[in-house]
Amino acid sequence: MSEKTEDNGLFVMGGGPGDPELITLKAYHVLKRADVILYDNLINRELLDLAPAHCEMVYVGKQPYGTYTPQESIHELIKQYTNSHQVVVRLKGGDPFIFGRGFEEVLFARKQGIQTHYIPGISSMQASGFSDIPLTHRGVSESMWVITGTKKDGSLSRDLRCAIQSAATVVIYMGMKKLDEISEIYQQSALGEMPAAIIMHASLPQQKKVICAVKDLKSASAAAGLTYPAMIIIGKVVGLDQDPSAV
Image 1: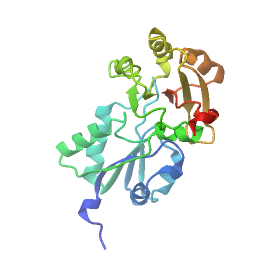
Image 2: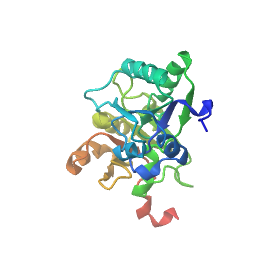
Image 3: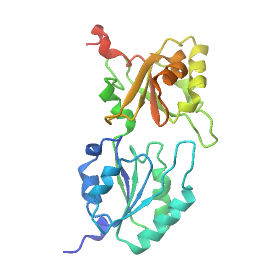
Image 4: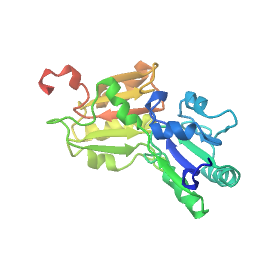
């Protein structure tokens, strides 16, 4: 029996935070019948093993602050492969709609008349739970801000100055080159002692983390040998596992 038309096209898929078992069942089943996979730098290569033998693998990754495949080139590859293949997977780390430019690719594909499908992924920030850091906790943090550390122009989002005026947990993606600036913003508001964590390779066996005061982010990161990609979590949820009053 042939596949239904609605089951073909471009699948913009989240590959999760790193552990290959943390993908959805829908993602698993689509990967099992993929004709082409356009994959990012941050995905676990074990996910590629799920694809059938005939599947063509095309690397379109971007090294943090290094070499990268231009977004325009990725768009052209999407157009090229969906014209010649039935199931084209755009496989991204985490969730493609959280700082992943996934919706840009969906909009491009739709303009070309390409059928698109979105398959969510577990974001790396959710993998903070493997380090005993909840993003919210009753009586401690009732909300969270998710902020980019590197906007289109390379600068840190100004939203951070708004976020620190609340009791919310702050999660910063792509912020490892802005540790000094992040610390300074907190110190300017007399919040330099706020607990913070940096987690690298979340959910993987080689996961590394450091917990410190936000004013010490740069020195603590260097001492622990952390680099990008990593996520930064700031707020009173950090260190709750050592706080008996948190129960």
